[in-house]
Image (cartoon, rainbow, N blue to C red; front, side, top):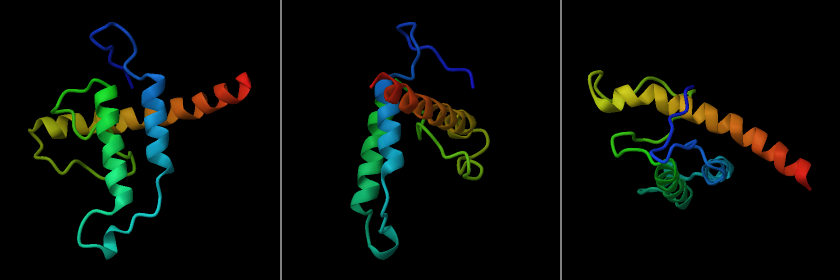
Length: 111
């Protein structure tokens, strides 16, 4: 994946973005299937997703910020901005996942 540069000229994936991604990955226990509304775990996941979107300085049409690469094709019409963003959101997930693994190793080595 080509990491887009922020308007400030730096790498868009900050240590904070990596921490937000890791926090999202640690969430478990979704019970939406037995509720009539979104469960607290999913509420927290979407709160973190919004925070990640902001941290990555993405545009409003670059939503969702990340998409699990194991998910299928985009649900957006093929000619839409959402469909165009979908492969990039999957690539961003992979890059965050890769950096999160290295970030953990770096932290362990500093101790």
